[in-house]
Image (cartoon, rainbow, N blue to C red; front, top):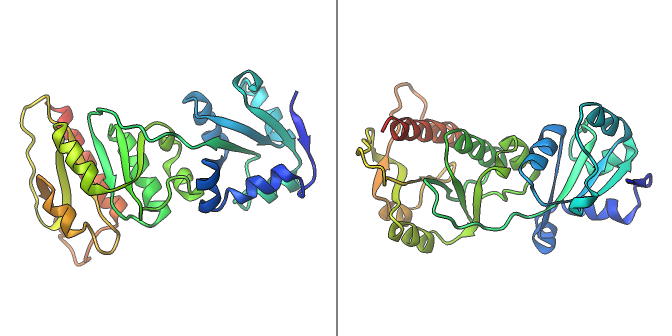
Length: 264
């Protein structure tokens, strides 16, 4: 049976609120997310949930939809909370009524068909949108540098619309080391830069494994990183704008490469 929490001063409530801070997330190796869609997605992808906090009305609606919320066999504790407690632990003005505490997903270095590297991208909305776009384009994994926004930031998770749960993630890496490892494993490193070429043709080679690097919103890729790329791509600007938002530019590049790869 679910437990019940009615006080905003409850110790579990305080510990959940603390996870809104990156320092605490890192210390406890845990994060939180909220919302019905993300909850369903996390259950489907077996994200390591440890606690579920849910309002009576949300619980009733989800059970009426046929969702099995008997999670004790999976080691998940369920807590029914009143609206005041949900408002306390939520980061949303109008919470949907369910919030989860999870263990962070382990860095998973795998031989995947492709990766996207986010180099020092600092806006959480951009990071989340790029994760969602990469997932839609068929990318296998995401790699982030230490200065990239924390992938467990609430805005990143919400912007990813659950795609963060689908992809292999390697976080807070040194690019020098990871790029060398990727090259030795047969990956082709593709960067985005103003001095790059507009055209990029993929050989009819089933062994082609791309790694696409997207750089900081204002500064772009670092020079040291550009020097390690096999190719540099440039998106042409036909109008008067100086540049594109990194999540827009990333979407164009990812889909252009995905289209060419899938035509082979």
